[in-house]
Amino acid sequence: MMGFMASLADQLATYLHLARASELRGRLHVRDRLLVLAAVSAVQLKLTRIADCCRQRVLAHNPTHLLRRWPTFAAGCDDPEFAHFLRHLWRRYPPERAERMLVTLGIERGQERAAYYSDEEFGAALLGVTLSDLDQFGPADHP
Image (cartoon, rainbow, N blue to C red; front, side, top):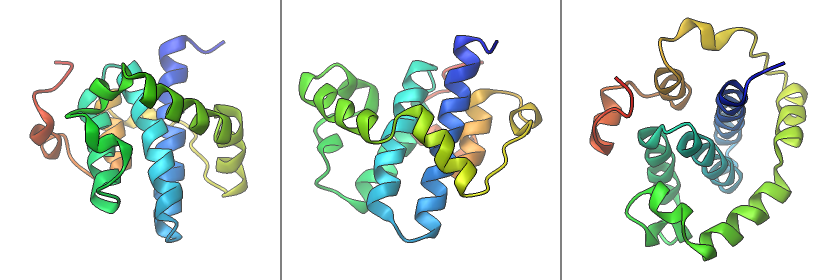
């Protein structure tokens, strides 16, 4: 049985893979929704730099997005209005559906996480950035 933290890391990877696939298909609004869900997983994993990188990408595409109201993704997580928005997204893209979408797209994850030192490094790779690129969002959450 998979542990809670491992399942959150898997959930993060699933949403990041789906976001990338949506971007490649030119479906940026879908990508943005998936990036928000990835960011929630990142916050739960205490990977705030990954969450803020997701936030930055959403805002780069949609500067008027609800996320603009908070300076960081984590800051928005405590707001009831944001919680309402997240409930809507979770209903639309629950983890089980996201997993099925991944299979439908033919994305095989295998043991990909094992190739990385940390969940943050793994998340950064899925976002197409380096750990150094994440420095713009503050110091590393984990040593």
